[in-house]
Length: 381
Image (cartoon, rainbow, N blue to C red; front, top):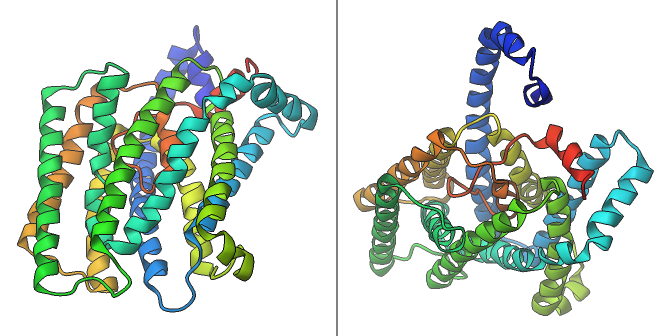
C-alpha cells in the first residue's frame, strides 16, 4: 500500500491519478477514524487512571504498572518486527543481536531518555492521583511549551509568530486554570483526604519538563540513525523496564515483596496498563493517516471530553474562569498545529513520546511510513 508510493517512479504517477478519487475517499474516512481514536485514547487514559486511583479498596502499585506497561510495549514491538521478517526467527535473532549487543554504544544512548520517561510515567500517576482529570489534562498541555523551547535550544528549530503567540496563550490559559483551582481550594475542599493538590501540580510540571526534553533528545538521536522506530522502542523499553524495576524496588520493594507484584490489579487496572502500553504505539500509527491540524484538534477535543466526563463521573465543577483558561489552552493547541501542516517534519519522535507519555498531544514531530520502511531500514542495523 504505502510501499507503492515510495517505490513507484515511472508508472507511479499514472497509477496515482487513476486511484486518486477512491484514495481520497479512503483517506478522508481514515482521517475521521484517526480523529476518533486520538480523542478516545487521549481522554480515556487520563480518566481511567483517575478513576482507578480514586476508587475505595486496595490500591495497586503504580511502579509495578509502569514496569508492566514497558514489558507489554517491548513484546508488541518484538511481534511487529517478527511479522515484518515473515516469521524468520534466525533473521529476527541476528537483527536484534546486531542492533542491541554489537552496536551497544548506539543502544546506550537510549539510557538517558529511558530514565526520563520512566520518571515521567511515575510522575504522571502521582499527578493524576492528586489532580482533577480535567485540570491535569489542561495543565499537561504545557508539554507543548517545553517541547518547543527544547526544540529551539537543542535542535535549532525556528518557530513562527503564530506558534510563539500560541505558546503565550497556552501559558496564560494554564495559569488561569491554576488560579481558579487555587481559589476553589480556599473556598471549599475539592480533593479527597488522601490527595495533595500541590504535590500533583509539582508532579505534572516536572512531567512536562521531562516530556519536552526527552522527546527532543530522542528525536536528535533518531535523526542520525538507520534503525526503525520499532527497534528504538525495544531498546528504550529494555532500559525502561530495568529502570522501572529499580524504581519499584526503591519505592515499593518491601510492600511488593509482602503483597505481590500484581496486588490490587483489577480488570480496570489492566485496561489502564494496556491503554498506556499500546495507546502510544496505536496513536503514532494513526497519526500517519492524519495531519498535525487534526492531531491538534483531537487533543483539544479530548480536553472537552475529559472535562464533561469529569463533571458526571467525579463531580467536577466547571466555572467561568476554568472555561476561559481551558478555552485559551484549546485554542493555543490548535493554533500551534496550524503552521506545521504546511511543513511536515520527517522525524520519528512522536512514536516514542506517545508510547511513554499519557495522551501526548500536538507538541511532537510526526512519524511517517512505519511498517513498509521499517523492514528496509532494519537491515542496515
